[in-house]
Length: 204
Image (cartoon, rainbow, N blue to C red; front, side, top):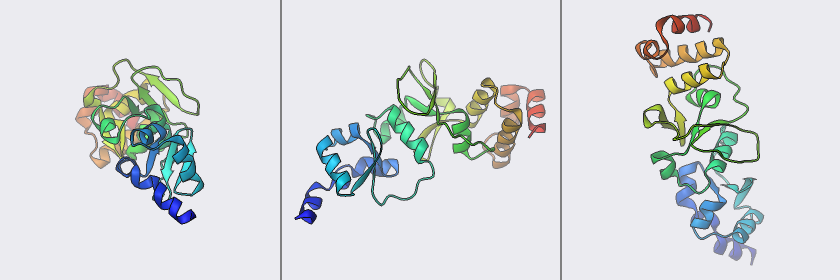
């Protein structure tokens, strides 16, 4: 009887199109859009089809290990109703600052607290840092990486400077980005000035 109930419930199959685009994660709002109610979510947790990670955030059991779970959960909480495609086309939340630097893989940042730019003030519970920018981030200043809308390398550097991040950390970030070909010296000089770039790189 229990196995029959599991098969009939089959929440992972019903939210597959969303979860597959989000590394196995999905939100309560996305489940509702797929016709899956709260009672069914609770039963799917009981039957170990899904796990509840945070308020309104779930993941399909058996999904691959995700080293960015904390960042992804926070990211989904900020715009729970949006689909993966909507986040790629017209995001309202962008991974930023040290979280963006860590996501790009340049420099050495702990990024313990998820940091985001948002297009409007949002009230959330939980450990994250939000920077409100009316109108959000211009399209030229963000990219999609690992399913996240994230500020570009240059935009990330601008934000790190603006928040008075340690110059040695910024220097390491810029140096790694240059070495990887993710930014050019000409782009950095045009944005920050040659003398500032040289001084920052020297502190790495």
